[in-house]
Length: 177
Image (tube, rainbow, N blue to C red; front, side, top):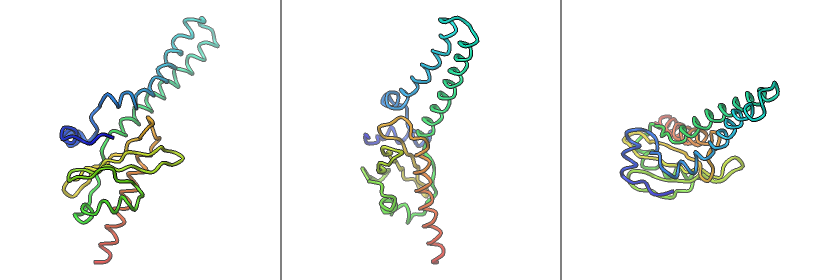
């Protein structure tokens, strides 16, 4: 993952999502070729074979699958581009590295405006690239797949893990006071 530029950070601040880049098209949107192929087959089968009950049934089935896959993958890819806000205290903000270590995420890069980390590989994921931007009393969190176009909601699992860890820590801190 390339380091964030100030232009990227400004775009994220104003749009709460990653800017669309050429790498995104190749790494994430190429998966859309499969449903496009199904869509093509669904349209071409009745034309080439002739409109019979059998070809019409297959065409409708393929068109249905194609539309479903296109909608599903486009929604997942857009969700993986978004940044989500997590409210934090100043103590949590300064100790964010400790929280990431508790989650067993490897820190790749850290500076005053953001931190990049990577989740370990698992049976359901080859690892996710985590990006956290620091804001006053909040974190902007994003989890994107690494080496695969879609992780089937692994980004939501990573968000919930960090969110719950920070929430539980805040509750424990207020209970001690």
